[in-house]
Image (cartoon, rainbow, N blue to C red; front, side, top):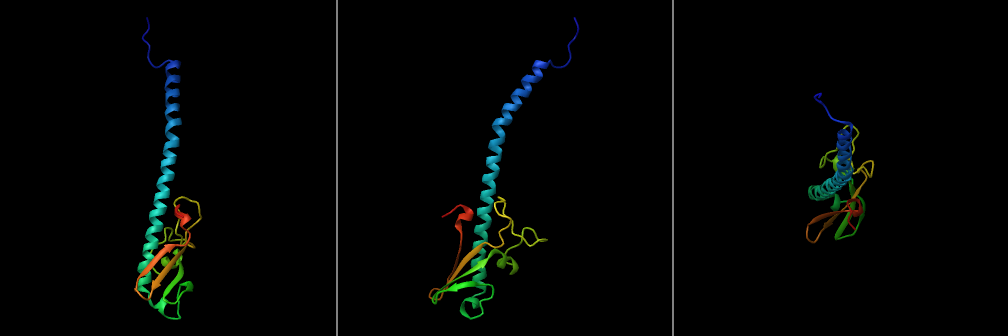
Length: 145
């Protein structure tokens, strides 16, 4: 009798079938987790930017109180003043960083949008309380209504 070395064709095919089944099960789970993670990153990123808008507002109250509105746009109200400010405005003022410094872009990790530079934050100042608040103009960006 000869000593057999190596694997038979049937054994190799069985291994290939088992690995294929594992891949069929694993790949959809991995891609779903990846998409979920990217959505979570986007939500966190946007919430941090909206919070940073409050800090910008506190540092720049003069724009609410004078005729010089600076980067603020579409201001309404007398005692409770609400204006719009873009993510790009905050980046230009140094309150947030561009993800792509070379092209001055705030990127979307989900890739649903080319960039987030023109996303709008509604920033409000109450003369009565002296509080600055902010919220995303389009909350559907992060899956909220």
